[in-house]
Amino acid sequence: MENLHDLMHDKRLKLKPISVIRLNDSYILAIYPGRKSDADIIIKYRQKLKSGKWSNIRTPKHIHWTVDLLIKSYSNKELTSKFIDELMRVWERIQPIKSKEERDKLSLEELLKYDQETIEKFKELSRYGEYNIKFLILLAQLLMLQEKTNYPHGKIFQTLLKKLKKGEDIFTILATATLRKLG
Image (cartoon, rainbow, N blue to C red):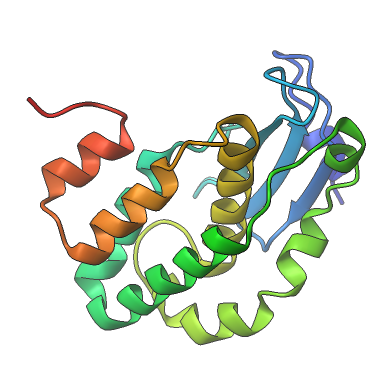
């Protein structure tokens, strides 16, 4: 069996993970100390490829989860809409990390525990798109945590959720996810 911390040690950036979790046979997610502040986190993951090997260590972007939610929405609009409502509630709950000590105590297992009921409620959506719901919920929480910690007045995640919920056109949604202005 592979050592998850070794598997997620980003030798290129010389980053050792604070916390690592294997979500299932397909995904390993890790958080690392960031550089923007003492409380900053970096999120990375590996995905099992069809060849059976693990992907390179990847950094998720807003565009990744946004496209995944668009695919889920085209496949099951009603359930995806309820899932977006759930993510909006998570946004309201998430509090920024205040210190290095708090950051270093982060546990991916703890973040995932309270969402077991939510995962069950939305597991049907795992059939569509790239990411399963368990991965998507944990990734969303971490991206929200990162945004609220580093950009206290930032609302990119929340803005994207609102645009997805409202059903705005794909160009507006994707421009927001890639931080581009339409003009």
